[in-house]
Image (cartoon, rainbow, N blue to C red; front, side, top):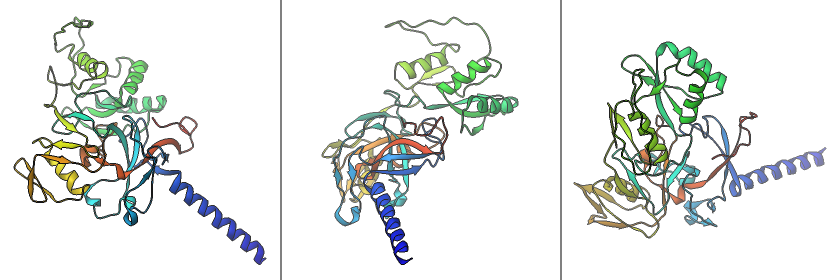
Length: 350
């Protein structure tokens, strides 16, 4: 009897050690905490994370510092898992901080064109599942919910209301296409930015090099074309097509790179230097002070990344916490393992 118990004890210990080694050295698992990455990943899903995608980060950084075996850069468009870089976590060891997941849109050394809200206003769209806000009449709510259930569209929670009582939800371009193909114009659902009455208008089909005039009736079509196929940010206010804010160049710091300080990036650089470079930094006016001395440039000691969510309603990305340091990276989201549904199980994350 004692031998049997001892044998089971050995088996149990061996299994626990094996699981611990796999989780520490190969893959780990995390659950999606919010709806920010829909429709790539849904809230509550469990995903496996490949710890070797960017090199294995050795544990116990507090003991011997940050080291990574087989280090490599994150590719733009990758969905990455990392420890929280939030300021409130600065006194917690990096490995013990909460896990975040988001899509990399800027690698170390890149220059991104961002507006004052830190939203990218120029450049390619890395996520085909990125969402926009759409408006529809309140009396169509039950019909739309039934339609979403029929089409298998999940997680599109109510985002708000307009002044006239219409409902707002976020949908990807593909989701809005599926809905329109199913019901046509009988369910009027339009982008939040603009709503036009039914009427026939002349639309010019653009040619290369052709100048197309903007009218109230073509502004939405031109806006979507510019965003999706010209790879430039465009929005609408009233009947005017425009860049919502003036864009400024933001350099994503690379190790050893000297980044110039400007009024538009001074706050972001100051927070990065203080939280992740672990040096004293303050701002007076538009001037950055490091260790009490004014600086016009700063040389960074780490690689950093800029990440963005799919859904504009959810803010859990670099707009909130700034650059993600390389030592916070855990790995690349690999495959969905939970819940076990035929259409999602073991699907590759992309």
